[in-house]
Image (cartoon, rainbow, N blue to C red; front, side, top):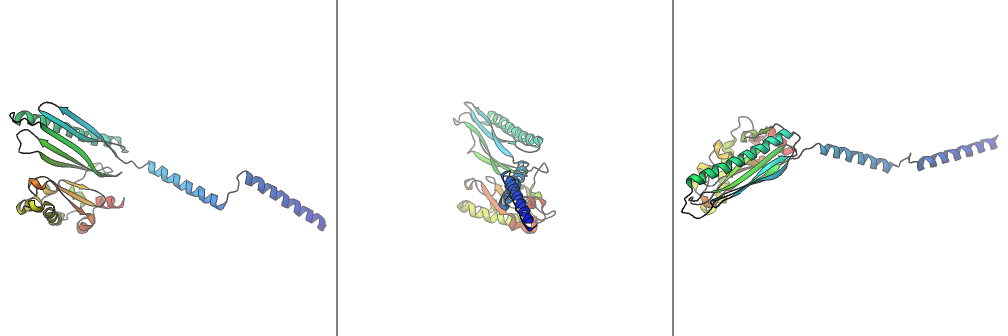
Length: 272
């Protein structure tokens, strides 16, 4: 009886061994490391799938070029693609297209009416788009334009900005970056005046600096933003003489916490 039991055990062991060997060959058993690898691959796949649903705007360049004996026009303006809402992409692109076409028309009208014929120099309009910062939720774009009509003492350069909240489909104002009711302009004014004095150097003019950086909303309409702070752009003659050029002043969000700590816009920008 013991002999029969021993044979039975050996037979069962052989069957189990053969079954396990067959299962291993068929890939039915996986090692612990293989299971971990599959888990990592599945996680990567989920991340890739999630990434595919993030729509990062792409900024393409469009052009308006026109040359005559009297004038030269070179305008570069942005066209936005890649947003989840195609209509928003089209509306933003149309905004820049209309603005560029109007700038060209206004320049030609000014040139025809005001250029001094005796001056041989060619009138010029040169405008370029410079994306400042953007992600899937926000756009901040600067346009720099050089404008000269024959007879002007020198070319004039001016800046315009476009700040946009893609999710809420609206252009951003400076107040969107601060707590409701906050007197933020006072603190910005102090910091801006200090920086203007540094950058203007020998061309610093106290009267112009006081006027151009005073805590008035219109002095701070030209601003750009990124993940770390606000950049205010002061046009020629705004806060310093022409020779000082265009002055840009960056103020980190962290230096304005008393005024922007409850701003939903700032919270989103700094945490994305």
